[in-house]
Amino acid sequence: MDDALVAYGAGRVDALAGCRDAERARHPETGTDYRRGFLDGRLEVFRMFAQVRRILEEDS
Image (tube, rainbow, N blue to C red; front, side, top):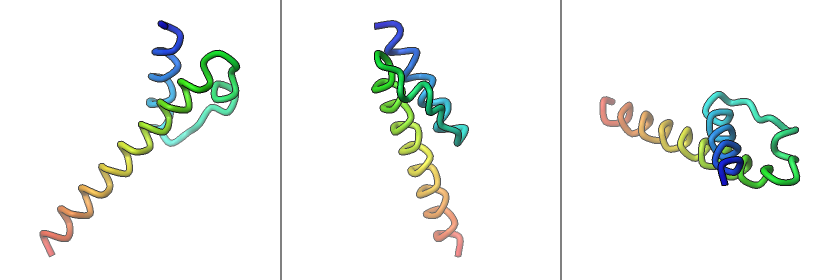
């Protein structure tokens, strides 16, 4: 369980930094958790940019 949480967290951090670790993503035991964390991180970035666009549109 701890390895899965570490992999998820690493995926999320990598997503927020904008760099994916292909080796971690292919890992047979924790690759799925890493990819889920990465996807969640990318969704967070997408939502952040969407919010920034809404704020900028309100100021226009």
